[in-house]
Length: 566
Image (cartoon, rainbow, N blue to C red; front, side, top):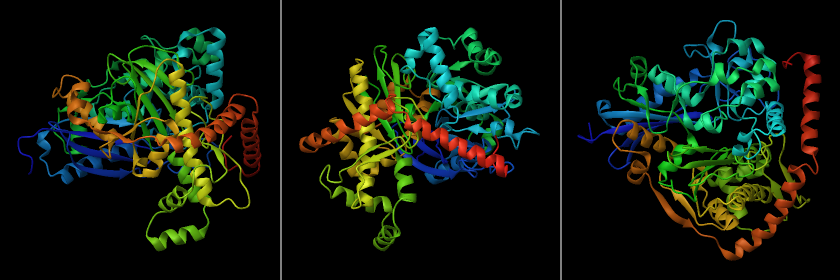
């Protein structure tokens, strides 16, 4: 075995489609080996593939929790083998998850989809972060909070998302009360996987605060919840309330069963669970106020520490210790980024472009980026809204949808592709400006995630936001961040900040704004802002009306074919 005398930690990043494990050396953060395992059932957003195959309604996104355990069985041993280390030298393991992803379980943590009688019930499965079918419940949660003057609503930018614990829980109650009653614990997947690793259930402070509306040690009151639905009054007390673990602390020790799955030593430290975006700040060594980390993948999550509490409109949340103990952690985000680009490439590009890409030995994304980059700023004559998966920040409305304005008979595929790239950058600028207007300025934008490899996109973001754009060194930011937290949980460092200084890295100002391009993007951003407010702030609710028409049409088809459950 190589690396004799060194200690190692494992970071496991559970993403939307797969989980990746990385072996990291404690003394310097070197990543020595990794392995990935795709979820066998993927994302179920059209059919219940793990059950009776029934069609799912619009805006659903489910997963099978057993797929997460398969990552532990395959990716962790695979990463250890790739690193060429002795498993006995591993001192800790940390995990992170996409959020808010919810698992309904029995008292011992068994997912309800594994319980007899519930296999064919969609509500018994994991509701993935991009399950947006609880928008109606989210709207009611928000409206009632404002009507009652609930103080906690300002901590979430004035709106609660359909992605979060309470909206999804209320949907469960109102659409399948039998499954709701059988749910003893409503568990974040980030905590469920730690439960499997340790045999001990601990809620993490990050998701409890951002996704679980837990502020100042309390959840929303029973009176408030009863006003939403009388049967929802004890939701927080009975299905959520549990021990809270602080980030970087140990949730417990690796149990015998999980040691057998992973091949790691029984009894090593298991870090408290965390969210993929939030752990990445440590991997980039970007934990100081003003450093906004944007984790860009299928969606984008923006996280930043602050030394003061401020009310920032439309953010996902501000939580004491939500990223790092001692700071207020701020979160915002965009529900669709890489997903939007993938949708366009998969469904809107003519065959001739695919043939050209194949002939040149490059991907369609690379081909379209090359063609788009050759254009002067604004030459396509387009502006788009990046709401194909709704708007997470700053409007917090998943009934919104995508839009492209300026199409003509001469518009080319690369024109629309570039407009979509620009739209996501404009969305990030809107978030940055909203923070600044609230007294929480962003001084450095740090990018992590799979989209880092698109250099044109990175320069575009620097130009649009007018900020120096730094880039994380690691290609596996969340997994490295989880490994850093594991090192702290194992006692190798005193706290996450100290560990991040040694184990985390970024390239400062890898991209800087070009003033000429920035000026031209200012003009396009002004048009984006007009469309943003016109369609997103209630002046024209056509997007919501179209969603209603779609649901009614599918409901009518259900009544005829009985393919889609009511």
